[in-house]
Length: 483
Ligand SMILES: Cc1ncc(COP(=O)(O)O)c(C=O)c1O
Image 1 (cartoon, rainbow, N blue to C red):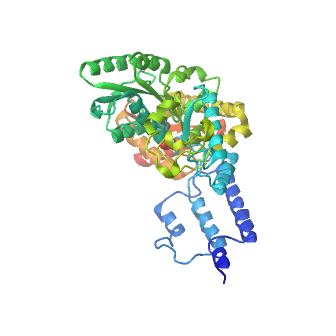
Image 2 (cartoon, protein in one colour):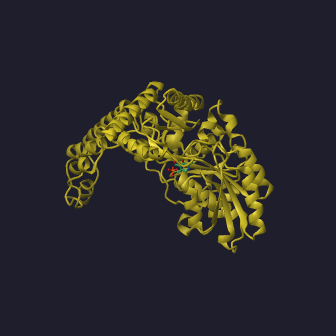
Image 3 (tube, protein in one colour):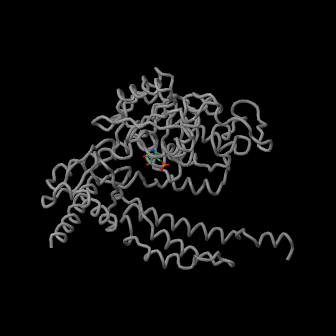
């Protein structure tokens, strides 16, 4: 065998094999999309016993390879044992990807652009900068904003605090005195980011709509200044994870601006809803934030992982991340476009071509259709709330706000003290049942069954079926417990 033949016999595939592989993969991907479209959430109730045979041969690293048809069969089993974001999946904040987003990710993998800088990935870098500009336009943030795509809201929130620190604190300040203000409903990724950075976190209470209490915020900042702390940043939320509340962003901008603090808005779940004219007024003040997190993998229907950090001021990110690159990545280009390097504006060096799925999604569907789809998700949540209100054995605990509806089963047989335990068992029963999927939230100390609708396939009929399933399983549990 010549050296050339030996190299060809290593990892590459002959043209016919390549075509056969991608034919099979396309078929499998199509089957997966159809299964996600039709449901159920789980083909069979999930359990470790169910997964054991699927993964039985996986204890040792394979020394010799196996043929592709067998391997694809094994893949099909793994996919088939997974959770599908079917129309009845209302847990956490998950949306199914549109088929166009899936196709984009397959193409991005094939092209394998490492989107570090224009120097090494010129077209992909420009596509990403375009995608960032479009995201800003969609939600009414700065035009053009600075920023970049990241793995998700957690990464965007961490980067926002790093940038706030560089912008508003001297390098030699005692970090424990620097204080970040959040509400009791703020996502835990902000607390995690504060802990990573070693800055303090102050939790402010919420009003009756579960929005950050602005008067309490103002007082806490004044008190902290008096006590020698150094207020750094206010974090508002545009769509809380538990109930979908949107903080009063204009009022937060007044407080933060008046005191020279950074305003970050965590819109990982909700900010993309600002694209929908019917709810746009809720987001008034968003454009005044210094930084904004939003997640295309939540409400732009692209596959995970894709979050975004948008910034009003491009210099701020460069101040935080733009020094000290090694010589081997030194920027060689001239001018703003050709010398642009993402590593000067964020944490990562190697980065995937996330932008292709955002760019293809927005080009294919257009902003108007995306906005209408988001508005329809919100309408389905409102319908679910109506169904809950109409049922005397269900109680609406919050909302609906944006596309989240929190409720619980209140059978007349059970006293208030037993309702949390009953609803927790009911939640587990719903998840194991697999026809629909809810997750939980705590609303004013009570355990809620929480439905978040970010699924372009979910209809009002599915919301009605969800209520029927909760009643069916809840009723069955009450009957079994009273026997
Ligand atoms: C408001 C909010 N912020 C941040 C996050 C974290 O986002 P990710 O899971 O993309 O890291 C979430 C996740 O649901 C969220 O709802």
